[in-house]
Image 1 (spheres, one colour):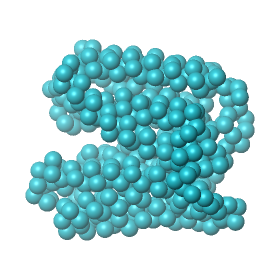
Image 2: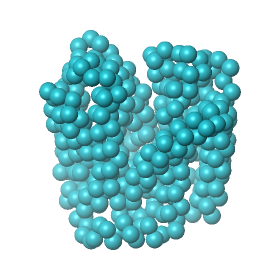
Image 3: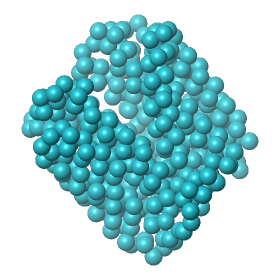
Length: 393
């Protein structure tokens, strides 16, 4: 297969299903970052420390990572849009319940249930895009879709902070419940429209997962996304702490600076079509590797905190050049069971991130932030170039 993209094939970005999935991705992204702003307010309301209140974050994140491997096979069997619709509606109900949670424990349980629902959105959307678009068009389509996810991550903490300041954290969940309800109903309507065209798949789920793991190319993609999660997303968790430590910044200013990473990813989603017209897929991966190395080196050597803004924008841009290419490859790992394949891909990323946070924290405690960030930049360069050599054979 040529690595020159065919950008003239079918465009699905104006379809009703794509718009509904994009809206769901925006809400999913907002949910992932929601408690960045709400945690102090929740802790105060329940009269606990922020560290104790963080159980609501843990509950959501755990469910979000775990249940993707369940949603994938369900999407292959019952329809990807249908599973996304039902999951989004369940997230609406759990969000509404969160607004009335009488205790911190009940709020954690409801956030766990919200994570169960929200975790279906991204894998089902990626698999659906893989089903509906040719490979040549897919990276552009995925890039635009990811833009909505990133926009939610950027604006979610801001909206949550403003609403909780004007009203309370409980009112934030009223708004989320209503938004999830509208998007879930839109997906449900679309799923009923296309239900007759959806083949119901049968087969042993465990066998399908085992068959995937026996494929050498699938393992290459899964190992790469695991290592990306370990190296990049594991270290990203410490960038805010590093900026505070290095420049003695306030929490508010640190949070604002971290939003520039999401802005960089969103800018990538706007530029991806033009970039692919000028670069082969192999070159795309090589450029992303160079950007990531330069950004981590720049982070380690920052002379002033103001320069963190362009560095973090470039970091987000470079990361999504690599990550979106990996997602595109993942949609081709097993076309017959695309939902299942994407679920394994997402789960590998989540596990890599979980290990990465621990390992990066250990590295920082031993050699410090600067050497750790520099080493991560070099390792990401090696990883991206290694994958580029195998992906374009």
